[in-house]
Image 1 (cartoon, protein in one colour):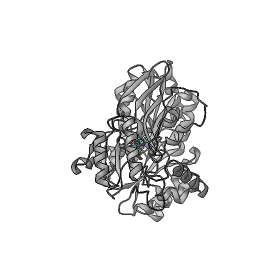
Image 2 (tube, helix red, strand yellow):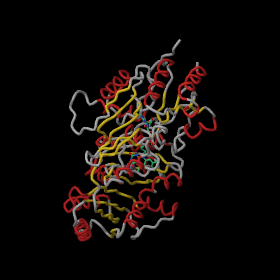
Image 3 (cartoon, protein in one colour):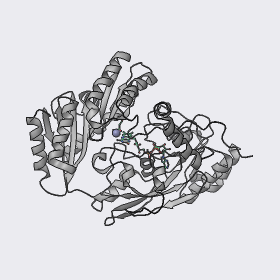
Image 4 (tube, protein in one colour):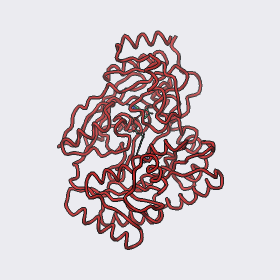
Length: 468
Ligand code: FAD
Ligand code: MLT
Ligand code: ZN
């Protein structure tokens, strides 16, 4: 059966569209954190939507599971196959045409395999901004960003990936192509079905192309790093900045002093202000002049009121990039430091200081010796409350932190998704009604459970349909 399918795939896609050599499969088989090693049957690399549809039809007929993969930068093990040797990885890497940038209609159309940075640069080349920014942007793809409803550092101002998707083309689990590549800002004609494929991590279909919303690129920006005495002061600073800078604030990131120490240790990057327990990296942008003055007023007020202890405002683009580098290197520093469990949590913004107190207390009591690496998108109520586990069992640590999150009415995944990393925790913590609804959607679109099975939701009971 399997060899028959592989030979059909070879006929369909040609040599550049199929990988079966074990050495070449390696890079597609495991996530970048090396937590979820898998064994693909093969990797298919279709060149266009028709080929994706034909591959999916072959999988439908043979009951073969498919795992869509973009840049494989995901945090939740969603893009890699299981160890059975029966799942096909479908890489979108050859579908990398950037089709159109419209600087007047403010849209960008790209195939799913276009790397996010390439799309950002194409928008920048015509004075526009694709306002989604994350440290993995040099490898993450448009399809992956949509499939995970990625967040990043500009959500505060521009929303998550979902808010940027105007049109979508997908291939459904039965091979049907649904082409909704419309460039419309207003479109209430019928169900807004594209939402089903945003943030569902390739479990309902394969994103093959998208039309994204872009915005005029602001002419001026200000970036500042401040130390703050505690997380409550960071929230007071946020309010202060909102009073002076209004909707110009495009990023407001909280960083623990210990996170910056990891960056210093592993990358030799030095913070330009005195050491402290907590820092805030803030960026504001506008096309109107006077931004820098407003930012300086806001920062002066914050220092005067004791919300900030020390601070520096970047004097050039280079200095701003250096400040951002301190933030962007945290994830890699954490990986170099040792084994960690990631908690990508959100709680209502005003509750964050108390959440940090209670999560810290719970860990000290139940998992002593663990170290917290806490940073993230404070302006969105989303913290990466990652724990260097130093010998403790990952599942126990997970449970301890998520129990506190649940008590605060929070979410166990604000932006990274569930993948295979958080399936058990999601099923433990979501209400029965919500899970039943999710399963009904999955079954309606993918009755054979061939589209990225076991991700987001546990596998459907019973064997997958097998063709005779
Ligand atoms: P992959 O990792 O290849 O896939 C992710 C999921 O999407 C998988 O379930 C996969 O099956 C599915 N998928 C991929 N392509 C398609 C497609 N075309 N159709 C259907 N399903 C598909 N994420 C954030 O949200 N915010 C951050 O700030 C952030 N920072 C990061 C920083 C670093 C250093 C790293 C390594 C990662 C970070 N991430 C962040 C996580 C990751 O970069 C994003 O989730 C990104 O959107 C994944 O894109 P990708 O192309 O690599 O997708
Ligand atoms: C980030 O914001 O840099 C990533 O989403 C976080 C992580 O490493 O947990
Ligand atoms: Zn993040």
